[in-house]
Each structure stands twice: as C-alpha cells, then as structure tokens.
Length: 281
Image (cartoon, rainbow, N blue to C red; front, side, top):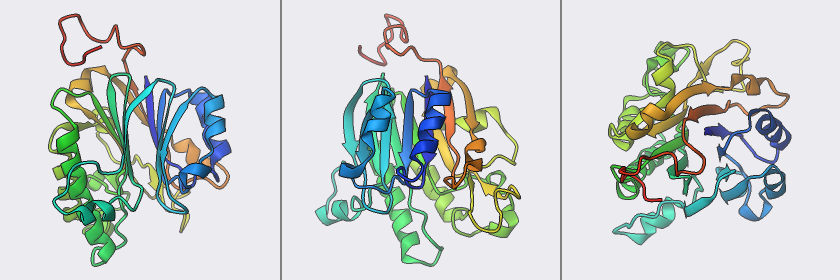
C-alpha cells in the first residue's frame, strides 16, 4: 500500500502536476496540505475519474487539507473534535482548516498542516505552540494503543539539525527552535516512528526548498514534511522516499511529496492472523 503526503501549495494551481504524478506512481492514499480552496470549489472530478474517493476541509486562499483514497474512507473527522473546557477555544483553533482524519483499510490516517509560526517573537508563533498542544490532546483521545496509525503532513518543524541544510545558521529560529521540537515531541510521545529515518540516517535529504534565493538549485532545503507511523506498523514498512523531482516542475509547489510503502493487503482479511485482536474485521 502506497501512502503519500504532499503540501501542494494550491491544489487547483498544481492540478495537472498532481494528476500526472498520481498516474505515474499510482498511490493508494494521498494526503494534501495547503489546498487553498473552499470545499465547494475543490476539484473533485479529476481525482474521482482516477478512481479516488475524496474528503476535504478547506478555506479560501489559505491552509486546507484533503485526503484521496482508492479504498473506502470511513469515520471522517474534520478539525479538532476533542472536548474543550471553553467552547470558544474550540472555535478559535478550528477556524484555520489544518486537520482531517479518517479510517481507511484498517489504518487511522491523520493529516495535518501545522502552522508555520512566522517568527519566534510573534503572536503566530504562540498560536503554533498552542495548536500543537491541542493536536497532542486530540491524539491522546483519538488514538488507542493498538491502533494502526499513519500520522502525516507538513509539520513546519525540522526534527533535528540533520534535517536542515545549514543548521548553525538557523539554530533557535523558526522551524528549528527547541520550543517547537519539544512541542512536536509532546505530540509524538514516543508512540510514532519517523518513517524516513528508518531508512536514511544521514543529512542532505529535504522535502521543502524556499522559492527565494535559488534554494532548490543550490539544494538549500529542509525536511519538514513527515510520515510518522505507529510502532505496530514498523514491520510492515518497506520504504520511505522523498519524491524531490516534483520540485523541478514548471511553477512547482515548494514542497515535494513523501511516500511510504506498507505491506498491507488492500482487503484487510489477510493482514491479521485469526487470533490477532488488534483490528476487528
């Protein structure tokens, strides 16, 4: 089973690039971020014609997340759904469309677009940290210990120095600060594995390159797009790659897709032994 995440930076602007890539790669599930379109204007037809079911959670010009799947989508949730002591908090952190989740083929797929934060001393940074706290609470309530989870998206955080082309230059700055990394670790809580780092331990592998200053041409990138999997999926993980050639398209997204291959039967029945009670078919 091929599962991808891609910040497309406007799904309508990049539509032909996206569908061309899908035709070449044939992923089972794709999670998009920064769709930048209200739900009524989302380009459903091109994906449906390729055999995908589509769920989306978007807004005009900013943010927006979506999931397309060749397999049946169930139990769809949009935004933070856990209870808040103050209802106005729930409204505030769901105004920006940044989270969508669903159950697909026995997997819980959670797709996020974490706020960028702008700069460390800004209100947007405070919002980012608070948003991550709510994400942690959401996962605490939504994810059981035995769930099979793919937790994907644009996290706007480089987990370590090896995920940045010039770590000394950006040390302590946005997407590289200790505060953000601690907030991310509080979200993960040791329950998820970074798929890419299972296969590649070295630096030099990026998923995002700034549009400015010839960053892509000079290979000055960051790894901020991630696919985390629950530990009980680790034995099923066969590969994780960054499809960086998509950054070479004409007028591309500034992000490249990240893709994993899980050895899971598409019908579920053959995935678990008869005495395995992790998932009820």
